[in-house]
Amino acid sequence: MTTKLSRMYGMDIFSDSGKFIGNAQDFILDTESGEVVRVLLEPLPSSKDEAKRVLREKSVMYKNVKSVEDVIVVAKVTTGE
Image (cartoon, rainbow, N blue to C red; front, side, top):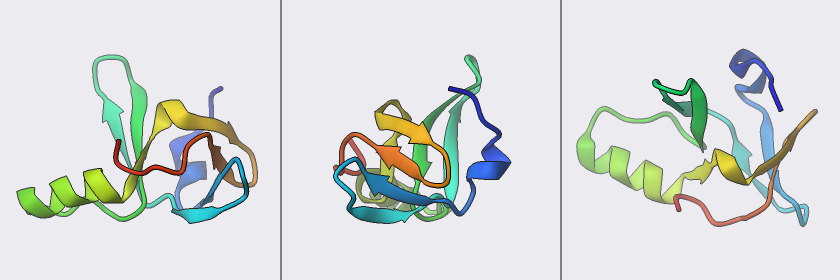
């Protein structure tokens, strides 16, 4: 699956069971592979402790994304794996 990140910003994120999770606010990329690793539900703050919290509580692993159409559908509801 390929799509432009600019298209994904602000998209609604739902679980595959239909539960609204949040909106795509930012992304974490693997600079070596060029692949998306995480979708963040809020922007990554500059504070190290706050950044850890966002990664733990307000993100979903991109490997759990099942589809990107009008919304982003993820296989698991758990955030911050």
